Length: 441
Image (cartoon, rainbow, N blue to C red):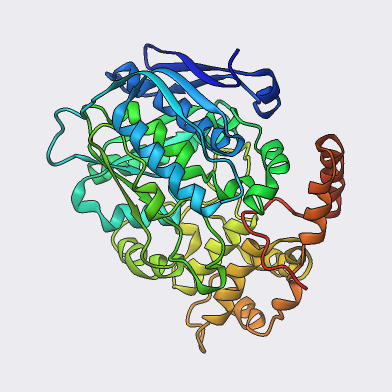
């Protein structure tokens, strides 16, 4: 066959969209699965040129890196043109990679979202985390439709079902109280590509790791919305993390306004919201809302067997718990379980585990330490004592230079690199991060 990737066999059976790819033999090692599915909870009335969008977008960044062409029988014209523009943006970001991929479609179709309710013409990618909750509350006047994705992160559907049943129940009820539509999309698109293999083999082109060019938002979540949007909404909101900081200005992260807002199909427009830090989001509209009603946050990425939103012990949970507590918000009212043992665990993490983390883990703690108020007004189960201790904690001494370990990993054939990676895991050396921090000379 041609040395490229063919997207084919996209079809709907009830609410389930299935698609398949065919790849040349030399590319097969970069794919964990050739079969894609997405299950929607409403009827889908979209042309096949739209149904081809989710899988094609999923594999497109790899095609750009490897320089191969992508073939498809029919495709939305606007989407095809937007992907050609995005390729040029990323080519400037990563000049060492190929980025000469052609999307070759037998037929290009002009699609429209069609009639939408003028009071409900906006969709919002909604995880329940701080960023998406902030975006919801800031744009509540738009009556946004909340869209959650099961299987687009570390665990493909139907894994992690106990936690997901709790997530869906929690936010279904929340959306109902707010008078909003709520959709859940179940999918396996996060396991189509072998991300670790791609990151290893193409690291010299992307300079640290695969996730610089393939953030979850842009190429995993956005395209899943395309079939659902037809006839429902023609604006889509996506939540950014925080405004860029000077110390990471040289680090290019793919999900940003100038990329996400080029990601369009039919006559839909995307808006990337990134205006204030996470701390300011909590101190502002989230705190204001909590004075009127309950609000459950879901920040945990761990696989939880029990029906709960968060494990309340991982680094993401600890950061959220700390920021809520500093703001005067009881974390137990926001989907967490906090008691005296939580702050003991927090100390242990900072003293023993933080040095095994890389840049993106310790940097938020450093920022939080710098912004500690002179007087801690609130005390949740011993939080005041913890923050007074944390004020003098030498966090910079925990910064670890992992570049030696990453360089060694990338220098080996992939079969040996996987073995080394397991040894790193045993030793607590974490090399797979969006950005490991500046190299120490």
